[in-house]
Image 1 (cartoon, rainbow, N blue to C red):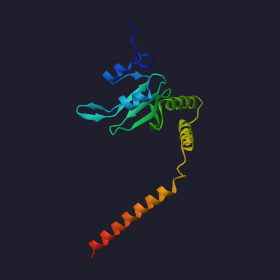
Image 2 (image 1 turned 30 degrees about the horizontal axis):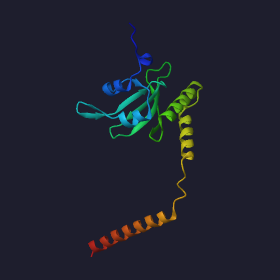
Image 3 (image 1 turned 60 degrees about the horizontal axis):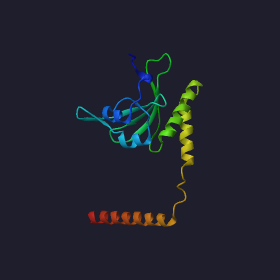
Image 4 (image 1 turned 45 degrees about the vertical axis):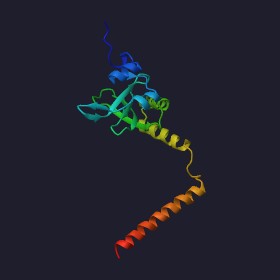
Length: 164
């Protein structure tokens, strides 16, 4: 009988993952969105981390507030402590993009390149690819301006009444 531990352990099915909440599973957007929830331990909410079975080192953490963050974790050779590189939150960074970036981070580490540079490069590319917010409808700007102006006038009027 073989003892499957670490990277050689059997991948969990979705049902196993839901029941036990631990182990390595092929992470999908649906799993992160629908099934990744903070754990309750001794009546206290705790962060929960899931491990991807497709790309070793890829993890997704759900914080007690509900935010979900992607990170890559590995232990350098001849080191006792692991290193973590956080590179985005879900749903801004989807599972496929997280896997690709994780592979690029591994490649950078092997080639002696700082992984943080790879993360920054990816973040900059994502920001540049996002739709520009410079072209906002002028009517919306005027509506917001009028709303803000009315609120400021109301606050000023209340202030004057208080100090009469």
